[in-house]
Image (cartoon, rainbow, N blue to C red; front, side, top):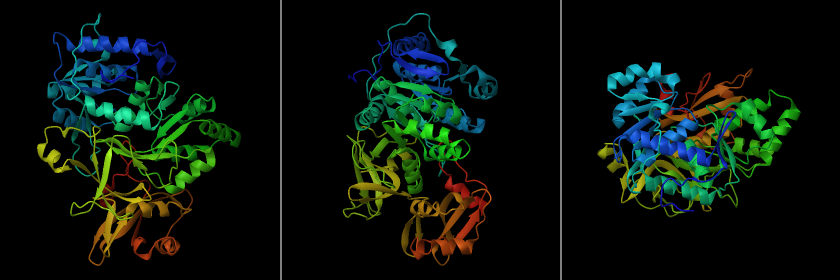
Length: 494
């Protein structure tokens, strides 16, 4: 398969590329539509020359048309979260210096005021489409192609810029590692302003010649029905989705649960990512469906960097080994390479998959690299060749009583408590401990939990210095669009 023209697309195939509700679109149809969009967005220009074109569209034929159309015309695609508040959109559009915003007509009334104030042209896909295709520019792989924004859990979201070469590397490493093929059929219900939905599912699927079913949200009954019919053979989701499925199983008849689980069992691959998969969930899913979840590690700046093997042992609580073409190494706080197993260090990454820059933020770009390595800020240990994430150095590594503790590890144990529905652990400044382990817990309906009983329960299940010093009960944990807990906001609850 050629990668001389990015992104690779099965342009002359009558195979179904996209399914959107009752509508099916072939590769040829989608390809022709993209060319008309590219021709229209160019107007009188020969090349967009990295003009930033944003789009506010749910998963749809229009989304695919716009993203690929901007790429082919030489622009920088800036996909936005359709759940964003106006103040958030203001930051994204201003930061990226967007000139045109493509949005569904249902959003125009709510976006008109913002676009007028920022002098951004607001358009729909139909406004852009040309009547006839025209010659499109030849794009150098080193050119900028896409800008995604960081989740902003620890600071103001930054624009992460990837080149055509970067995106190509991110896709092709997964095509190889996860053995994508044109026989694959996958549902896409994850947000399409994030690397997981854009690269791992949509772009890999279209590159491989697979069929992608588009959903504007995770519709459990509708998707479950397709699973019982054997429609899908690949399923990718965040841990929260798997938890919701298990909770859904408790509300329906056992024979229906059996049918859905049989549908999952027949799939070739189930993947979990974007947040740590608790060992308890890993084991539950295996028991229900027979599927051994493939957990992987990635982020906006690198795509995917580490993965459990498609063929080989998949370890609960581990994210696996470096992907093809990705260099990965652990470094200690003094920037020395970590040589020994089970010794923690920051994950640093090299490879064509690594982003180019933070948009117009030279200082942040420079500080995120050391000797050519991208510093992820995530701390891990290597155990018998497999990486295990301990958490982000800023929020998940708790320095308490002289120990470096993994919040993720403590959370994993607490989730096995019969009363706990969800939990987040952080370190709170403490005069005695430096940081005191603090657990924020949402309880299962009809249950109660006192701190003393939790402390007693923890004894024998974790080392004494890992046992929470404080317990805070909450109705639900604060999460971002990808289901990740926004830990910095937890301190505000105290």
